[in-house]
Amino acid sequence: MKQENTLQNLRKKQVHLEFNGNQGVIIEEFDGILEYNERQVRISCQNQVLRFQGSDLQLCTMTQESMMLSGTIKHVDFIG
Amino acid sequence: MLIHLLRFFRGTLSFQVKGKYVERFLNLSARARIPIWNGKREEQSFCGETLLSKEEMLRKLAKKVQLEWVQSEFYGAPKWKHRYRRRIGIGLGAVLLIFTLLLSEQFVWRVEVRGNQRTTRAEIIESASELGLKPGVWKRRLDVLKIADCLCLQYEDISWAAVNLLGTVAEIEIVERVLPPTVIDQSRPCNVIAEKAGTLVELELYEGQQVARVGDTIKQGGLIATGILQDKKGRTYYTHARAKAVIEYNETVNVAIPLKEQMFVPAGVLQNQYRCLIGAYSLPLSIGAVPNKSGFPTIVGFVEAGIYQNEENTWFYSVHNQRVVVKGFCLPLYVQIQQYIPTQRISVERTLQQAKKLARLELQTIKRQRNNQEIEIVNEECSVLIQDNSVVLSAKWCCREEIGKEIEIYMESTH
Image (tube, rainbow over all chains, first blue to last red; front, side):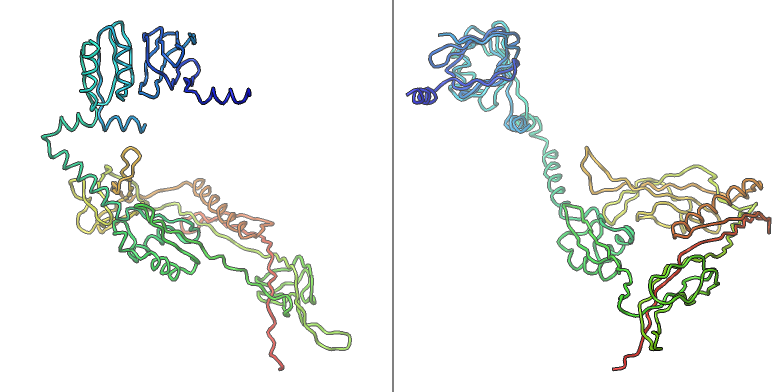
């Protein structure tokens, strides 16, 4: 039963994050950007909001599928 | 790297937008499948880059979310195309360059030799050139199998050859013949004879019957041990005689160094002549004649250095060929630098000490050669003489050498 729940969770479309230390992150399966400035970036995902805080945050690449943020990331929060 | 190249060819638009709803603008761009990179937020503005072809769409989106399109500029291949649209010559030149590059790939521009030890590189390259394989020939005209076969036939030392065409390089790969040592069948009857004359100082007989004794003087070809033996009943039988025989002999080596000698020394300014070598053709790059135009050899090949002399003057000359390399890419061109120095004949006088020193050095060289031939110099006596205005260093050596040689006894068949 527990195994089935885990599989179902995996099948759900969930945000995928890939960090390069604290100097960059690749975000996949996101809905859109809610806020974007040099100190804070808020990204809307399925049922939650992802918040990155740091300094010199820049949008390296952005396409429909993924985005890449660079800069010094200090905090990551999952809100909601 | 690849992505940068793709962006360059498709053209990149650098833009800046100003306003409140940057986030909305970015979300709409992503949904419209407009890629944005190198984005940077500054207060109320946003700078970024996108593909040149998406400019129209991006401007519409900016207008939709009430953003002000501040500035934009584009770069990459489309910009070049736009800038040089009226300069047909550049386009033609680029096409011509590509065509020339593609065409030049069809020719051999360099001949390399691999695997040679006894046969020199210059010999093989010269032979290959006679067979048609030289820089500047069309690759399709070459019959590489035939050239390889001809090289094998031409040189006894080469047992296998192949010509590999690797791009514009023709690589001649050779394998030299390993000659087997003369093997005498151990079952056949043999004598041991002396290869050189001298006094026998050491003899180790392994098989056969001893003929010479330690202390005997033996001639060249003299019998040391025989393979023809007799049993107790007087019947003759044969065996393969084997022995190690060491002899001592005296050798006198004279080295003469003249006290006065005529030599050529540089006397004048170095002159350089430049030529461009394209395959088998040579184009002069320098204006001006070679020291003496008439009769001076035209150097086109790969000569390194030498002396040229005619009735009037003598020159030292050296030739260097430099490959033209542009950013690591070897072009099928050589720049040949020919250097000439006029010389004059002078008389050099040596002191006795200098002449002796030179003679000793030469004697050392001869000694090393003997050692390489496995000749041991046991004793040495040197004396210096002055003969015909030369210092003659005379060395009397007592040499020790193994000289036993097995020689087959040929017998007529009784059958």
